[in-house]
Length: 86
Image (cartoon, rainbow, N blue to C red; front, side, top):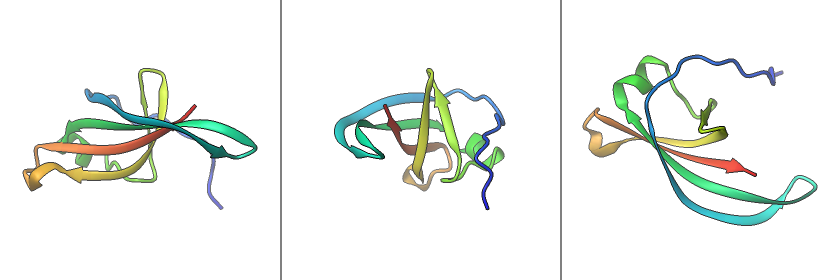
């Protein structure tokens, strides 16, 4: 069984971009699902072993990671597609 507790690992610089927001059914009601894009340095993402199982906290929002992309396969920028439930 998985442990539901989250622990902070490391802080890093990043850029948060809001893509879209939509209302949809969530759990026992309606929630706003906001899609975001977080950009950070690729070597930082690799050094902290960032994966789709992790969560990112940016500006007070906890974001669930959907995918991690190595932009243009240049090993310079990590583009992280995320979503936040509000």
